[in-house]
Image (tube, rainbow, N blue to C red; front, side, top):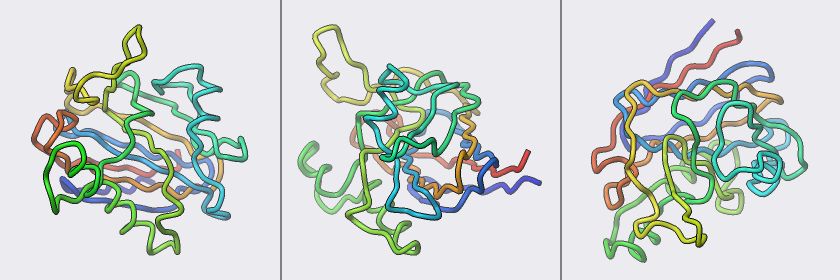
Length: 200
């Protein structure tokens, strides 16, 4: 059985993916950034932990075979398929305050606000937002360990690119379909994405 969900440009989604089931995130039009957080659905104080994940992966870019670990060093999701080829782990999420700090725009909300809206229905809030993964995004780091001037770089838009995550515990997944137009992460044109949850 497969459930398909369309998340509109700038929208968000949160839901529980039972242990063993797969969550597929599809960049339907190509070039769309997708901000992602995850938690233990049974004990949400246990959540995605970037340092554990990156130390185990030995890479700043996540792809097929990499595990998303919690702060208790337990696997939350395993990436079982990736047709994009490496996803950002250091750029974090945009927000109303960071948009003003970085781009000088006011009153422009972002992924942080989407996360807060989605987390509220699960009894979670500001203290539960941690550094997230940015699927289908590239933040290059050069040999001098410097980031690109705009941090996010639009270097490849792959129509229909997908990443498939298998839940290794009952997992709460939280997604912001990034509304950003002030940096290149969405090529200046946020678009819809598709989510599929399957038990096969």
